[in-house]
Image (cartoon, rainbow, N blue to C red; front, side):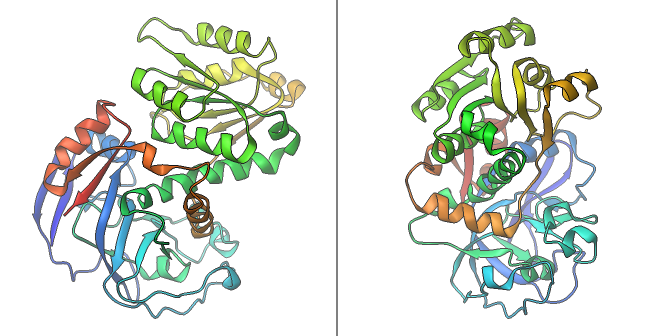
Length: 372
């Protein structure tokens, strides 16, 4: 098979690989999936430019995958953390699927409770195991055991289906927000810091699930226009090297009559976003750090401010197969969640450098590799 293999920062090679070879670090049977489409995440660009501690090169990147089964899996549902009633292994050769990229150990306390994304010894397709920037990908046995291959309805295209996994990650954040306070959600004031694909998926969820009043903060004019088209009530455009966190805080407070926001979602790796989120937080509000940050960021956080204002500071990471199934149902309804609006560019596998450049330069929203 042909694959785009990452060797080191700024070094990806299109080359021939053996599709029958194991994806590595797995026990038992694996299932071969033919790629239909794979989206390019900002994480992929970060790894391409800088590497990452959890990436084991040489490896094929890409974890936002829609594919087609080349064989029928026959894996028993054997792990205690999985709700067997919520998942049926109804998969045959030729079935279109999305996959959960998490490869859990199935031996830690988090796996025992079904929190596979928090596994102590977590592996990930597209990071520690070969991913979707290739003609085929092998799905590890442990991913199969947790129901990590999920069939797709005909109402979702291959391209839309690549965004099911990021939608599930965003939904994970909203589940976390709900677990802290329904009162906060009912006040329906959300600020989304970040105008990229993830920020706009958060926007769609906020509008659809809660009918929320939303403010999107970002730096890219065409992305903010997309936010308006998707229903954002207000957008705040930042100018590079001009707008400070203080000016953004003032503008948000002006838009909320000085009350601030009940939910802030940090969907950008810019560390300044945390200062903004703290400055606009109302009492009894929630700040969710969704995005990964550069190494060793430093935040000024007054514990007394958290205490006396009853602030909930939370994080959310990745998603479980259960959330992926819920996300498929949401997207398939074709009502408030429209994943096609997030896809702006399409590339061939041979154009992997172009796809990474478009993503890095913020020239669109999501790029999908749809020709292998």
